[in-house]
Length: 512
Picture (spheres, rainbow, N blue to C red):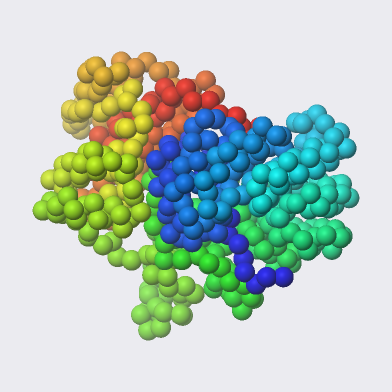
């Protein structure tokens, strides 16, 4: 077995299945480029057959990213597979990821197929895909809850048909580390041609054990690929966390005996980019990338760290990309300096017009905030890309008044289909009044299911980043807004969410 562990990132596919985490083409491209800087081995760019938009995202990433293998998910049918192959045709290295459910529950209730029908579908699909692309991954969905005898039969056959990677998912997060590791080992020992494919693990975090299960699949089971996401993003309780897997294997190489290609100094920038793009804030006590991950509140700990860092630190903060917030630009910075900083951050705007528009927003921010940090620039560009994508509603201005003992009042001016409109309302607070002022005109009827405020950097001068999650007619969307004024950021986030609700893009659910 190889001593190299392959990192397969599915932030742009499985991570995007988090409620409201859908991303635009430009946002996906920006994250894909950051994953390439991170030296991720395989990037699952999307599910090409789910919509024209997803097809275009996979195609754009396949054309832009040259160092990582680009993968598209496909159900086990010729149409999905052909669509993936078409989207990937310009990739330097392409992979098609074919899946079909194999547990008795899924076959009966979801697929309504017999085991023999599933076996045949898996065999034919992998054969069809292998004729289009040389690198084929096969996943038996809900594999961990599947009958081992049937699973062995299916996997042996798809390896014969040309599958080069076999992924055994714990689709519902049901596994326990020791049991899951031995489950993978048992399959590998029982299947005669198991050595002809790389074995992979894909674990969900419903019981909080996705990382532990994945590492057990590697150490006990002999898997050499881990499927994971930045920040553990994913549906329900999320996926296996890339940063935790990578740093566990690197920090405990004495135990795992494995190497990873990841350029770890880009982990924290990737985490911040994904968080700001999706609106899913990283909890402060999150391992590796949380704000408290390298903070030492205890006096005893602080004393120990000052004397010798390894008393309480098993990793160096700078190794994963933590550093003191670096002031990169200010109000006197020119356009070329701004453009260079965008390139340093891995942000590529489509045209000079886009760069000029972003620069104007930067200058406006610099007039209000003396020090501009990398996080400010990422938030600014993310907001700009959303505005370009969908222009149903756009923020213009806000005026609000609040006084102790008085009910706050707000007036919000915004555009609706290009026409300037004005909404006024009172509320329980300035934010409530402002959002009600918008709703007084829009009348969306949407239910707010999340309102979150996060400081982008560490000072009182920081921009506030607000996430608003709205739900309407079964659709869930996240809107993100940033501004030094929290009330303005809230209004921007609400309008951003309304824009996404207004978008009628329909997608086929991969595993629905």
